[in-house]
Image (cartoon, rainbow, N blue to C red; front, side, top):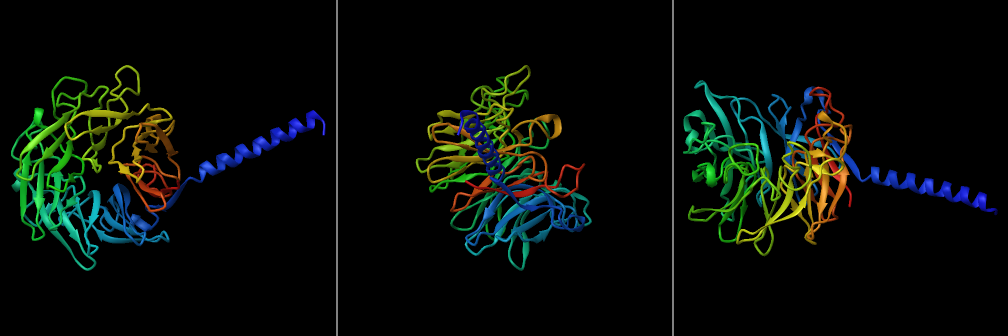
Length: 424
């Protein structure tokens, strides 16, 4: 075989290998379900929040819109990919579920709706609810209305449950303190299984924090940990005058401590998501802004993954760079047995989607801070804009949702969202 022929064969073989590699990468993500696949979007659209995975491999989640009354649904997705609607929401009896679901030992589901609609004939604005969904029944554990704004308004994060069946959560607005919006600075609350509701903390804005928007973490001693979207020292790095957000600890006796205040600069800013905790009590989370990435005039940063020790020392594990990298992590992290972190970014991943800011990514960050983009959404049938985080199964497969994209046509041809699977 002469050298020219050998070179041609080698080039052809390299091309085949390259095509195969590209095909293999393209198969890393698969759409398990596309919303608005049923007439009139009866199956829901616009999924948000982390999925819940049970021992049988069923996935549970919520959509903010669609369903029988276009006010969202709770859905179940079987391992076969068959979707069933467990609950349709509507004005006046709960609307627009948001955040992640939790499940008790009996398989009952708990979550929140963020409001809209009216209650009865009182014409009172409906500001959300905390609910319990059983196989054959649905009930409100608590409802927020205009007449009780001091107890909170608009719960938009998932819940956490203790061993006695009490659930804990946050409201983004409401409470005893006004803040600049006049709607209140938000609360931390507790609801017992019988529906007794208690405000554990009223945020005051400023150094105290304002606008909790992520899920809480509950430790073995009954302490709660969470984040506020705003608050902290003014005028450091954020564009908003209300501060760049905080991480707080709420003791079992109701005493609040601010563990960390973000500056909006290299340390991050605007922690929209909640936290997770390791065995040593270290906290991990994301900020939607700040960090050292996304250089440019007027940039507020593309966000970070951070670690916070029990004593309040913060370390940025990774700063997102935008472009082909991620931009804007809005969701809570998940940690595997090796200490790696997984999550999503709402923007980034390359050109495409509205404003060419990218359609979002799925990422992995090692304990040492090495980031790998596992998938970049294109905005087509594969999905776009992952609003929630991800969940891992025993084999390391990653499941999540995108708010847009997919096959359905429900909102300016952007797609209605999908449930996706990314293989290890």
